[in-house]
Length: 115
Image 1 (tube, rainbow, N blue to C red):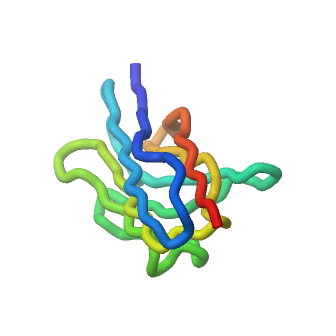
Image 2: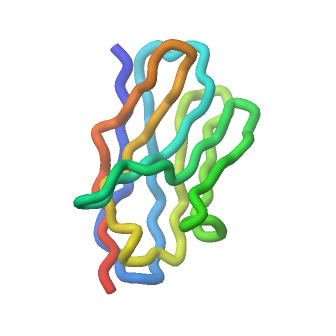
């Protein structure tokens, strides 16, 4: 069975940094893209950053210049380096892997940024 496990979340003060990691297990074939989404209380889930298998990246406007997404070479992993964190970044962050037929999701990791 395919599983995605996130790690690296926590509590940080505004201006600080965190690095989120996503590890996968099981057989995942025909991957199109990998990315990170987040959902804050009372808000809809939104794309934070994504990267294709051709290393094309896409970032939400609110995180451009602060966050960097990267994927493993030859293995299905995806990390998110988050710098200059703001209270508005507080959310549950979810790892995502999109394939031709299925989307896989992690359980989420909490990121809380205090002012």
